Image 1 (tube, rainbow, N blue to C red):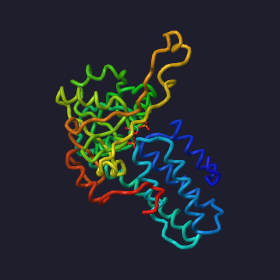
Image 2 (image 1 turned 45 degrees about the horizontal axis):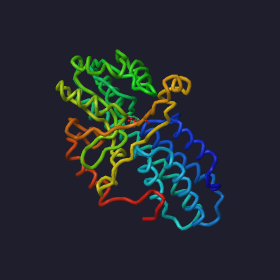
Image 3 (image 1 turned 90 degrees about the vertical axis):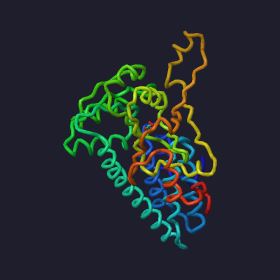
Image 4 (image 1 turned 60 degrees about the horizontal axis):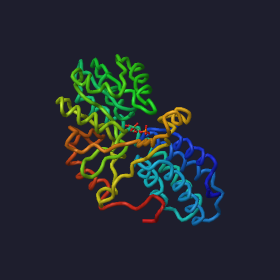
Length: 317
Ligand SMILES: O=P(O)(O)OC[C@H]1O[C@H](OP(=O)(O)O)[C@H](O)[C@@H]1O
């Protein structure tokens, strides 16, 4: 562990690792705030040491979870603001960039919500997978427009993030039916939209989201149910424009089964991938704060936002 990294930054990194802090947008917000803390608490005496500290903190945060691209995108946004030649100036740069980033994130989610809400009609039933603040922003905006929305919520094994979705929809006044993941196909006939979030969107329009999304999308396409992905532009993965693929996180098997049961079963191999890739042909629309896009055209928006590509957040451009 790098001694330059502030204990509060390490705590946030640990909480992202253990998923006490989770969800792509929430992780991005947390790491921006962590860099702010690192800058505010730094006792570096020269600009190079200060920059080194911030890069070390960014690396510690980056190494927690590999799939949600909002994490490196957030780090890059905050570090990119470091333009001063003095320590005090750099501190100010980081604090301002982090605050600006968090404010933009909130605004983007609200704007995205209005775009997504326009796709929902009064009386629609949605099916959700996992828990996505971007997806729920669409429902919230639709409810605020006076539309009656109902939801069929998949529990989303192994971590049951569907429970969070069920609670938050209930708080919005949306009637919820909770189902086990394997019942999804059975209920797709009753559904007007599948609505999910994203951890990353690739340049070809593929959507990387919680494991089970791709199977749900294939089933929904088979039934003719539209699939809507709510993903603010923070989820666009710049590296995929230059041929990189998105790492799929493999998590501990104890999320799936406890040691005692595993032994009783004769110690089978257990796999626990956290995400999967839904090809663009199974997605009807990617809803962002910049409007909705057919997945195949998302690369145009990516080029506009990122230019030709980006470096890792801790590498000087
Ligand atoms: O940014 P928002 O829309 O909140 O969440 C986006 C995605 O992040 C979550 O991942 P995890 O639960 O952190 O593994 C889910 O896959 C969800 O769809």
